[in-house]
Amino acid sequence: MGDIATPLTTNVSRRAVLAGLGGLGAAGVLAATSAHTVRATPAVPSNGRSVAVFGGGMAGLTVAHELAERGFQVTVYEPTALGGKARSISAAGTGTGGRLDLPGEHGFRFFPGFYQNIPDTMHRIPFGANPHGVFDNLVSTGGFRMALPGNEDLSFPTPFSPGTRWEMYNFDAIRNTLTAGFSLGTSIPPNELAVFVEKMVMFLTSSLERRNTEWDNVTWSQTLEAEGKSKAYREFVVSALTRSLVAARPDQASTRTIGQVGQAFLLNGAGVVPAYGHLDRILNGPTNDVWINPWADLLRGMGVRFEMGKKLTDLEVGGGRITGAQVADGSGARSSVQADYYVSAMPVERVVEVLTPQLIAADPRLELLRTLVVDWMVGIQYFMRTKNELSDGHVAFLGSPWALTSINQAQFWPGDFASKYGDGTVHDVLSIDISDWDTPGILYGKTAKQCTREEIAAETWAQMKASVNDGSRPMLRDEDVAQWFLDPGVQWNAALGTNTNETPLLVNTVGSYPNRPEARTAIPNFFLSGDYVRTDIDLATMESANESGRAAANALLEEAGSTAPRAREYKLVEPAELAPLRAIDAERHRAGLPHMLDI
Image 1 (tube, one colour):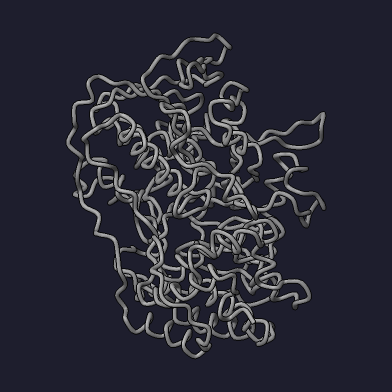
Image 2 (cartoon, rainbow, N blue to C red):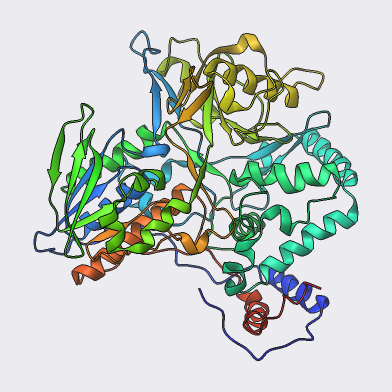
């Protein structure tokens, strides 16, 4: 979404900027994308053209869906399991007496209201009698809790979101939250809070040109001027909120990425963007049951073939095009793949493994993929013998060394959990995301990467208890834990004294935006999808992967000369009320001048 150029203005005051922001709030209704509808794109004959998609995660399933709807013959090659990092992972052997195995996962996932591409896909996946398909399996949380060690926790409703269930809240909790919030606020000097507010105002009123250049080349910590500030400002404003909300290190991630997602959270939470839904939504069951499996069934019915246990090992190049591919199964046996078009839907660290001199010669920009950085965010689940009362939404354990966030999932799943899963004694599943694997913990003084699986479980539990058991009644008790489940992608290497991780995440480090590719490559029949591909949301998320799958499908349709309608690529809303200020900044940026507030 570009900015409209206006004559260069140099005497815009802070008052004018803040007035523009006030207009944003007063308007209440912003320019928005059209509402999602339940639809299926009519298939258009593709003349039998075939597509090989390598990777069956979020990006690969999206590519397959969009192209199969348009009549292409799609085969997906997936080495592990459909759904990738978004799937659920059963804890094998835990179900007895006819009950299902306990549901583990890579880490809990949530669907902010500013996600639009994924909800559109969900609307198009039938599910029982649901009028809106899988989308109706999303439920809204009631609120969230910020656990502050040594302080009153902050527990409050999801702010200002459509459909907030205010009647569910204990007003004593709201009173305590206001008290704790004031206490926390007074521990941060007003002049430091002013820095944070001003930087957010600057980002909101910055042109996209400035975001893609200047803001991409500074870290979030640098932008918030963290050095020399108070401990409370550095720990909570700069670090904890960033790690908890977007699982990114503020000293690594670019301001472009953090600011853009922060803007989306802000607009979504303010409830002024009609296109956005409830701020915090999760699925009402294990991901495979209520999303991935129905999706795969739909795709099979549309003619998509899934070749499971097959991993891409080589892309063959001739005459500037991909002429074939090689895949290997678990035993190492190789087989050839022939198709008209080839789509890589693998994570970036897997793509790098198949970069050959021939491939790079055909598209030199692919070499830049080696510069991209990945980091760890992995989940652990504790299966509880009792229902837990931490929150009716997410919990952010602010100040925890491993940047923990959690949610009690069973409260959102219909039916009795104990009668459906495990051995009949488990009544809840507490799912935790560990976002920082490089900071020493409180039990062993080691980073998560340096801990065995058992130590990770003990350390994570200890950090959570330190945050929420500092009141009159302990919220987490050791005797309530029946067992735990850590993502099997994390494996302890005793010889090296460290863990390996099969499923790292892209980190949008400073200056990395120019090195990230578009979905279309210089090789006419080869396309890229995945959360490392340039997207509007610009963060390693399910939404980014889905958006990139749509972009890859559209690039392929263009190359094929298809007359089929293009896949809708939803964009984050840029407030129309701020367009004049962004246009002024675009002019200033082109003239080499700083932002009007950067004095």
